[in-house]
Length: 260
View 1: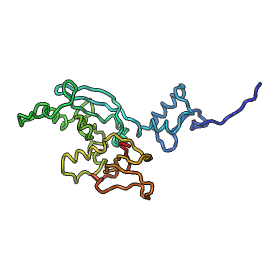
View 2: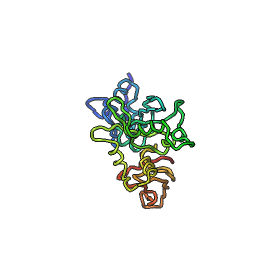
View 3: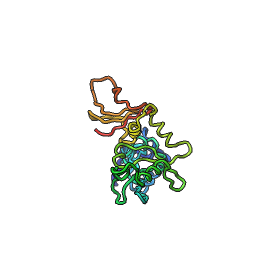
View 4: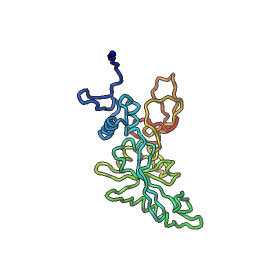
């Protein structure tokens, strides 16, 4: 009979008495339901315990992962439901990930599911507004009721403006659309309507929350700041921002990267 040899390999169980219960590493705080499913997949052999490293846990972290949101498309005569659709995360969805089911993406399209044009809302030959304009205005002011939830206008990003779409939120006890906008920043000094809407949209730009920067030029969102920063290896400053980059006041200190 040959000799048996033991070799120490990667330890993935977080409990020596109840093996193999896996847990997330330090710095990654996963909710119970996700950890339970990971343990189930390890038990079924769908996941290999030794391969569950920090990169894996960051991949399934709700605050980092791509979010799936419900969506409705509104035509001049009907409403179409779809989703949950995968959306690249943004600052607001990451912060309120526990309320993801209360966010609704709304798109206004024609009966062929194509983009609406300005002439659909107000003909060039007339100063009056069309029925389509009145329909959209009514939805924006009154919201959308689905079952026990009433979705109200929240904001839209610059890309959504081009696509005639926006975000709505169904208020719950302790959190309303106004509360979310207040968390985003202080917009009270902005009197121009178009600029006010654009500043609200800064927090909804598709981005990745990060602290590690590996490139030299990065388009960022930081609190109420927006713009491009560059890495200077000779500088002693952690982050230098120009006054002109500040669009509104915000207490949010997380750095969001849009493009590298």
